[in-house]
Image 1 (tube, rainbow, N blue to C red):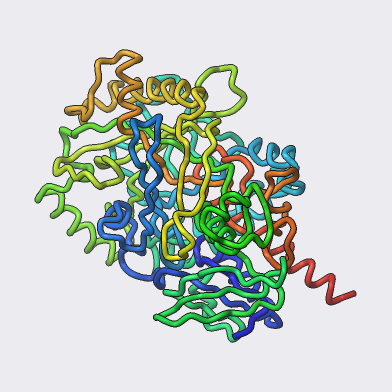
Image 2: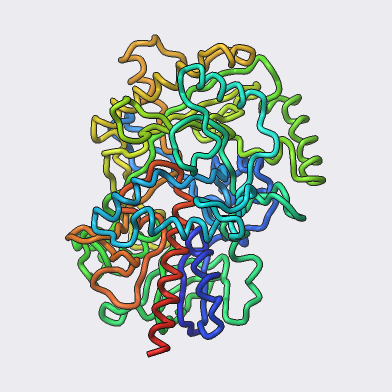
Length: 540
């Protein structure tokens, strides 16, 4: 089979690329996805994310593990990644966060021309269908539906009040004219019509409504094995689907949208990457590109968890499960209530010091007990709060376990390898603790799980014993200039032809916030630039 474009990975970026490129009926587009169709109830019902995130069993989730982390007591971290159309937007908390405008200006300063804030804002707006309507900073008609939460819990409002008592300003829009402050997150969720209250994954936003286009072929349960190369030109993708191996030919481009783990893995399996890494696995070098898989950055997350004296939060006791069952029936009826919750209802962007130019810490307040990515189950009602360092200095890498495409990548985030990250995380933990111990949360505050003696050493020991990712890996196919850059600012892989990467792996530096909305923006921008270039070429 032959197409103009073959897109590898049907996640947040891949869904956008397939939908936008196939808007031109003259282009033939094939999208391949290793997972399923992304339409099942586990994905559509926001509260059921709790059944997928643990990876036990592996439902719509690759459920990767990291290499042992020396600074985290040698523990292997857990890396959930979406495995279905929609990718990680099918299993995330739906939070719509763009990051700070200065983050994008820094990208431009790092050699990523055209990625400054004023250049990317139009693509955020193009993607966004905000229930509040359009304004100077927001879009109201885009495919990605962005909603206010229908019924945030009383405890979430108490969390906001507790933070304001700690002199943190209230903020009703983290994507507005300022990021700093405390408030409720907006979510990527349908806010009207028959789908009201359902998750708006990238596939639901962009792909499901256009899959009948005659020039778009979507293949699920199809595993990419390698990019087929003629010298350094990409000509197709070797895939395996339902026990058969075959090649999908691409006359224009192969576009990798596998994310910060999948895209560098696919380049390496195809012989593109650091020569030494390829040699370890007996892979012939097609193009020695040293930056592939390097520059891995992620948000390390530390959680404080409490039992709740009140039962108006989430619990997995018989009483709590009964409440969830009744909430599920209500959600099926009108799309509201507890089943529509993102769980991480409230949050804050904080500065560790007044002299810092922008928030460098983020909080996620969760209306249930989260322990080890839901892999340790607690039956009591409870709540949690997370803190992460927004722009970590630590850098890790992604490599191969073997030359087999079916094997998971080797993931080493190198968490806390730079001591500045630990110092900042401890500051954030102290600020978080002060909020959680404030008077407005007293009616709920019960026993604290994992208490320590309150000393600096006790806090550090607890961080090393329990901290892990909050699911924002980026940077492993970084765009820019210089020896370690993998792509140019349009995602084209340096030293190759007909090969492009479009996903969070392009980010040269981790943004100050959640990464799903920025990934969708990046795909919108690159797809628009590709179509514009094609139009100019046809006109010429």
